[in-house]
Length: 500
Ligand code: MV4
Image (cartoon, rainbow, N blue to C red; front, side):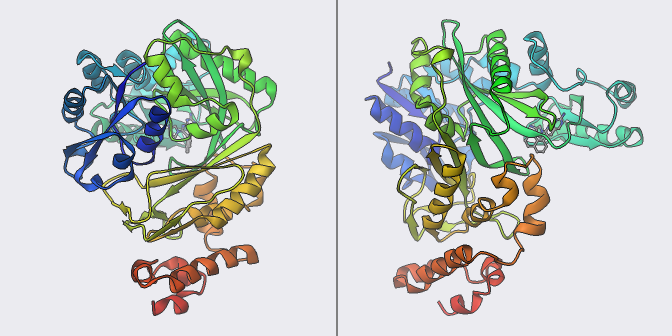
């Protein structure tokens, strides 16, 4: 095992990785930008190296600065976390060329899975179902010919894409040439690669993904699924394990498909195989993520496995300490992504100083947080500030604990997604898991965010938050929650808050 690991990230995931390293007696090196000099992840590590000014393009994305920090501190391995350089194959290659271990897959596997067309081919070779579609297509005429075989509606997707960039929904043949060209231009502008493929459009799908782990000895095991259908504009908000949409038979077929794909690709380390599942329970390979994911804690809570520990063990050459038959889920878990965004104002990012923080506690609660009272939330980075993860015997207990935890959780100084969760956790359709990937985009702004408060529970929550602001110490009151917010107006509380 390594003696010293550099964590090439910030925020909650850097803190998360540092914790496991501490458990294992591994010393940690933090890297930080000027905006993060005082940040929690710096305080949690044994050493810290400044890598540049606040913009991530001049700090967390600069491979040379991070490798220099590793060299300077004598770190033997680099954990990239997620985002930033985590899926950058060139960075993985530079890391190994510098004689350091990259806590992740090979750069070749990252390149393969980063290309949608090649990943599709790999899935077909592994007999994993894919959406009916095409290899890369160069011009609009060829696209029209190929579209006949697929039918409409269909999607044009950038092979280098992700998060919906370079993607166009095409309703009929007449619209194809224009949208095909648009997708190519956007792909070129966003990824420097204009290649696109066509795929049949799967309507009302769920996003269900399988966690896999693979060692350097040919062993591959899946650690069950996560249901991630609560998303807004391709940003996940809530993830759960297990998915109540799957029965044992489907779970076992999808898990076997995920393992088969990872084996066929000679994949190593932890990874995630994403599927779309249609209302008739047909599943289709979507893409594979070659990193630890934001939502990994729900898998940890139902399996009892520390995924970061496993990643470190795998990277240092150990064999998986279990086989597939050992993996049995215990209970259920749900993650709520607390971001500094205003859910009542189109999720616009909200920056500022955290004047007061009180995390939820009690049975079934895990907090993976990157902030503390006094932290600055800057617009330079991703708005994810903390994750509230809830475990229980079954989904019903998890929902009850999650409602309790959201009510208890207090963050003053920035707007957060907590009120979004407060409503979602009480929505009949979410409670019945009768949703799909566009549920939030279809129902939140138009209906849920503006509905009158029907439940006194929620009114009480808002009133308590308002009281906390107005009764707080002068220092807290001064910053507090901006009174002009649409949220307070919506609740009719602007008068109480006006004179803070
Ligand atoms: C799809 C699809 C329906 N049919 N592909 C969106 C981002 C990219 N990673 C893949 N995405 C989708 N691909 C076919 N053939 C619907 C989506 C999609 C989606 C997928 C996963 C999670 C959320 C989503 C939200 C909207 C659309």
